[in-house]
Length: 133
Image 1: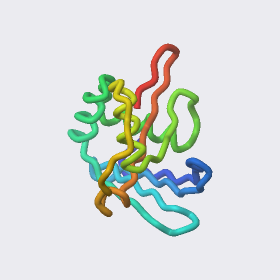
Image 2: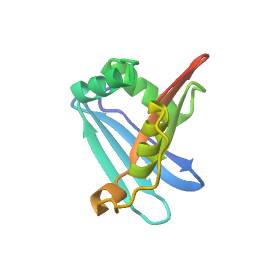
Image 3: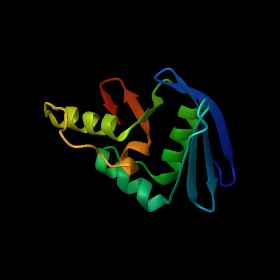
Image 4: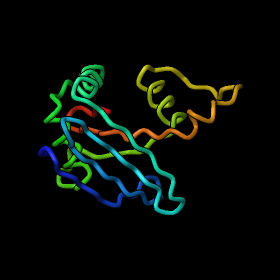
């Protein structure tokens, strides 16, 4: 993905259509996701250090330009090895617990409205014997 470029596609996550836009501007990755039915919108800006730290934590480090190219491929659906998912905080916790081998139980307390309104766009990289979120 080149500096100043922008990609926008409609993608269906869990039966709901969303518009996903990614943009690379002044060495910042800008991600916008909009629910096509409700007009709910989520936006984030990420610098190279943040993205590289995040990929390092997954155990599959990617340099910022490589990550941006992978994300572009996932949005455009030009590669079978990279896909996207859109998760709520509860979905993300379930995924984390499953990876850690924890049997999750329903929580007794309510999550804050800030957490329930957040969405997490997950880039999934699948290779022959591995799957990385």
